[in-house]
Figure 1 (cartoon, rainbow, N blue to C red):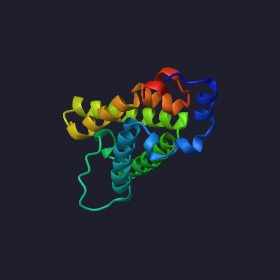
Figure 2 (cartoon, helix red, strand yellow):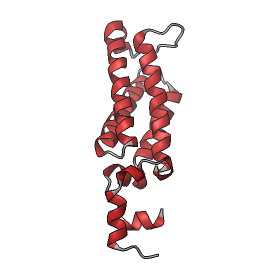
Figure 3 (cartoon, helix red, strand yellow):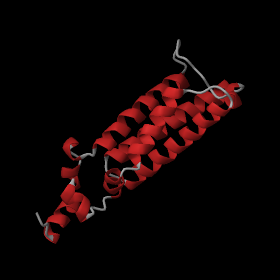
Figure 4 (cartoon, one colour):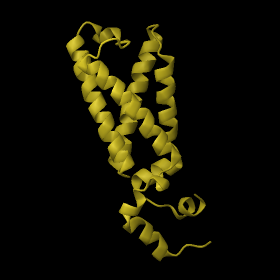
Length: 152
C-alpha cells in the first residue's frame, strides 16, 4: 500500500494517538520494564531496605552515604528516562542510553576486579540491544521514515 504525504503528516501530527500501548515497539516496552526493575532495586538499596544483597563497587564501598545517594540519583534519572522514552521523546532515549552505558561500564569494572554480576550485565546488554533497534530509535526521534512506517 502506498502512503500519501497527508497520511504521513497525520501520523506525526497526532502524538496522543501514538501514546497507546499498541503503538510502542516491543523493544521500548522491554527496555522500560528492565529499567524500571533496575530503578526500583537501586532506590531500595539507596534508602537502605534491609536484607538486600548490596554489592557496591569497592571504589565506593568506603562511603556508604555516597553510594546510597548515587543509587537514589541514578534511580530517579532512570525513571525520568523511561518516562521520556515512553512519551516518544528523544531526550528520554538519550538519557536511557547514557544510563545503560554507564551501567555497562560499572559492570565491566566489576568483571575486571573479579566481582561480576552476570544477571545485571545481561539485563544491561539486552537493554542496549533493544535501544539500538531501528524501530526504537525512529520512534524516539519522532522521525517517521516512510519505509519503516509502511513495513512495521
